[in-house]
Length: 310
Image (tube, rainbow, N blue to C red; front, top):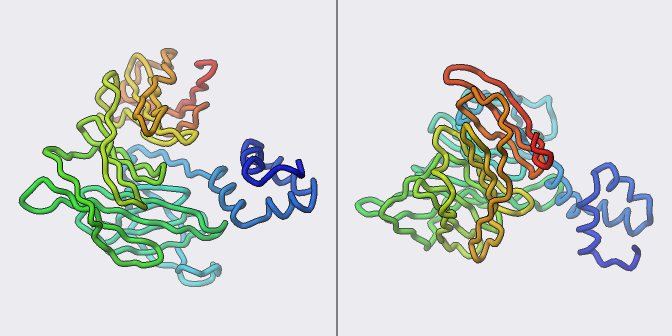
């Protein structure tokens, strides 16, 4: 073990339960130094942390938490009063991007209660990309897509946490139809991904500032009608879950560069099929949490174990 270079050691430790990783500090001085390094702690924190959000109307984010100014660790400092109703626009690595009554945007860490306000833009859609710098600090970018007047061209505007002012990217995107679904955008492979109602994905690479389209598999049903689909990243793979009264199907983008979609799982053991509305809320490759309800009712929350199909 002492002869291992850091990259394989990273991979080994990430596969262990969090408690076991902490125990490994006692193996040797090298392990203690490696695991205690802020860079490793940041990556470990992102791997084991997540925010679970489930609401009757998921587009409206209701939550009460005291907010404190940036760079403040003192709970005794005065908190700010914000509207009760937030529009959840995006989330990434534990940070939330919220709209405050159409007046401004807010990037919020609900765990540390730190936040930053961002000037509002007249966006068609918006996305949040987060990169860890240390266990306590994150560098983020917010990308706004705006429609230019009198044509079908879309402009990308970018703002970052270190320079809180919008700038126009030289990249433009032209499409005869660019209606976006209500699915929240996903950040993966250095790119933001928005699902469009044409059953494809608009991709914007943050570093290269290049835009492209990823087509869905032809057998994928029409997605994101009545909140019956889920879009996310599981084990570094773009994943789409589509639900119906009869079955639940899980599709993965098995090859990101060649755009090869694979049907990974089909669940036919549907619980309480009398619930016509099925809203996937959480999926990690092993468990799927579903909010099942009838129109006008609160319904029930169920968890499916994927491997045994129960």
